[in-house]
Image (cartoon, rainbow, N blue to C red; front, side, top):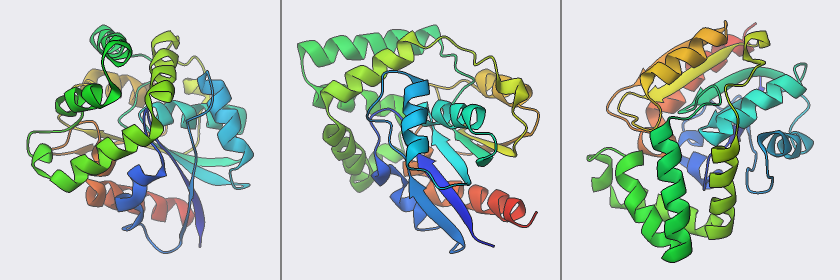
Length: 235
């Protein structure tokens, strides 16, 4: 049975961030891609994604895209068949991460987006990841394509967002939560909070991975998603 799978990127991301994951997805999965490049709130981003989404689909969201995926499940519960939440939270962010985002905004204004991207690498990838030049280059190129203006807007959207999302306990669709076990942006306690509030959530940790697991560990991410989606499509 085929299943529509809608991938939603995070801050500074576009569909290219899913390329390596997509190449390992099972052939019966019909892949689609949402955008978070236009919109001043999570609700607006979700409405825009929904306009181009299939009639029924599983939403797979990374980081900011995870917030969008959960909002999609709220506004279109009959269309969203399941949620894949990767490197994300219940809408809250640590004070440390918010401070880092504000500092990044200031650096973009005073210096250059490329400098901010370079300095962000250690927060999003493990030391071993940083040895993979092609992967890091693809991340940097993607962020530069998205550009400073949109990154600034996305930073502000996240800074201004008031979490936790109050509706999460009412979500009943099948849900899988993935997190890199070395993710310093998303502490494990926040992942636990997310899994506790969504009753259907199943957790899978990705070993030797930091925040940007779709780029750094695409085969492991695809394997977790394929196993979960296969069970979902058989029901």
